Amino acid sequence: MNMTNKQRKALWICLAIVVASYAVRSIILSAMQMQYYQQQAIRAAQQRAAAKARPAPSPRASSTPAAHGTPNTPASGSALRAHPPRPQIYRVSGAEKRPSQAEASARSGSS
Image (tube, rainbow, N blue to C red):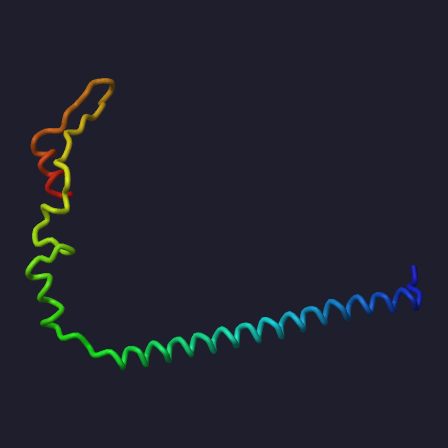
């Protein structure tokens, strides 16, 4: 079946619309990508300027609070554990089995 001139013209118009939509989409995505990279460069420049403006902390000043045990950083690990460990019961083929003393002490020491 041969196409008429009217059908051929409609087909060319449809193809032109598809090609134009890809071209426009590509231009829009390129512009958005360029804007994103520009914003990223501006942020990086601002962060570099802020880092240069701020003086570097001395190593002695940053280690002093941790050595004395401030409320935010406890000196001992005991403050981290609020409750004592509970004994655990295991079920082995219907019978209850309590962990041995060595297993219990190993578990409480590792956590």
